[in-house]
Image 1 (tube, rainbow, N blue to C red):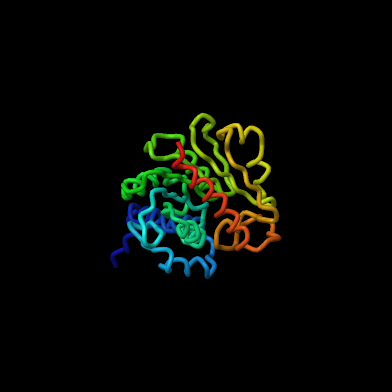
Image 2 (cartoon, rainbow, N blue to C red):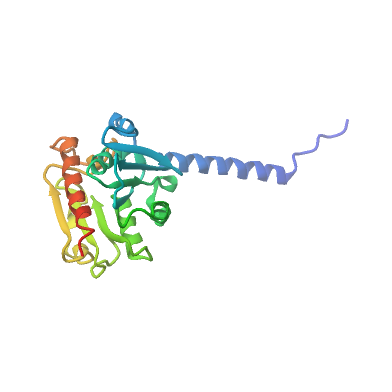
Length: 252
C-alpha cells in the first residue's frame, strides 16, 4: 500500500497565515467598532422645515433650507464614534444659516483622515468662510489640519472636549474651545502649556456638569464620569459657542 503523502509545508504555512490574518482583521474590527448610537442620531439624518439633509461620498451634510450659506463647518468625529452621532448638533447649527458637514473617518479614527476637509471644501465652492472642528481626537486632528497646508478660506476652529497639539498661536484663526467640567480630560484642555498653543483670543466655554460623551448622541464612552446636566442642555451650549465662532468668521 502506497504511504499517504503529508500536506505540503507551503500549504500549511499559507493556511496558518490566512488564519492569523482573519484573527487580526477580527481584532481590528472589534477594536475600531463605533460606540452605540442613541435614537436621536438616526432621527437627525433627515430634512426638516429648516434644514436640508444630504449624503455625498459618505459625508453627512446639513444646510439651511431656502438659502445658500456663506459659512461652513467641517466636523471630525471622535475616536470610535460614528459621524451620525453629531447629527443633532449639526442640525441645530445648520438651522441658524450654516453648512455643516460631518466626515466619517477610516476605521473610525480621525488620525487616519486628517486631510478629509479638503474634499468637503472642494465640493462647496459657494462657501466663502470655513471652519474645521471636532470632538476629542477629531478636534485634535482638525487642529492638525489647520496647522498644515489648507485653503485661505479656512478661518476658524471648533474644539469640542479637545485640544491642539500643534502650535496655532499665531495662526489668526478664531477658535472656540468647549468642554464639560466633568470631562476626565478637562485638566489637559485648560493647562497653561495647552492654551499657549492657541490664539490669545480663543473663546473657552466650560459647561458645568457636562462630560465627554454628551458632546454627541452616542453611549458607552469609557472612563467618562456621568454628567449632571441633560444631554440636550449640554448640546445647546456647544451649539451656541460654536455658532458664536462661526458668526465671526466673516469679520475683517
